[in-house]
Image (cartoon, rainbow, N blue to C red):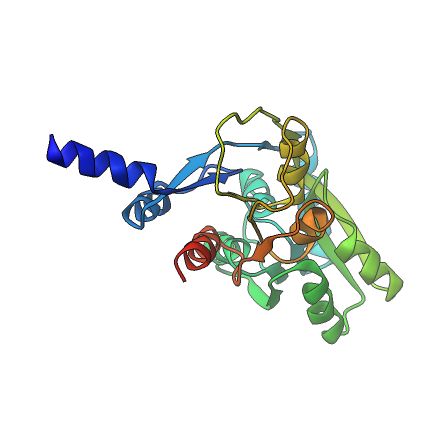
Length: 240
């Protein structure tokens, strides 16, 4: 009976966090060991494009231009699903999960530059003095990268390789904080939920943070753009 009482007290005193995407089980277990309960709910779904001729379009684009831009690991995964052979690209990408996906799936390619968010990545691209690049992206991609490059006279061939589907759902449970990993997840969450301005929200820098600025007064930005980095930010906030 005493052990059950101790366990119930620990659960009651735990920090409860909502993640707007499904996290790796190892992170959830690590959180539990730190007295943090993470509830995961997928507020977006990613669907790779399966349009006939997409593979040929990709092959033609990279044959004419070796420079490629990836701002999402989803774009990397979607290109891989097209089974394009022997890709040898010069890649600009977002660091963290996207870079890891590039390294894993395109071992014959070279990462020319990476950055934590889009505006910083643009500067890395400008530093290389290239004339054009292929931008692999989703149907809800932000304007940050393509607009900045076009302003600087860099031609962009944009190839949409996946679509983002919003999956709003009502969350009844009260949480001590919310983790957001993309602007689309913020939009989907707000479709059926209200966010108290005083509630701590955890975000990556760049577009997700921008989406939250007018909604929350307490935004804590992860130092690295990874799920582990986000959890570490949550832990350090509640247990400094």
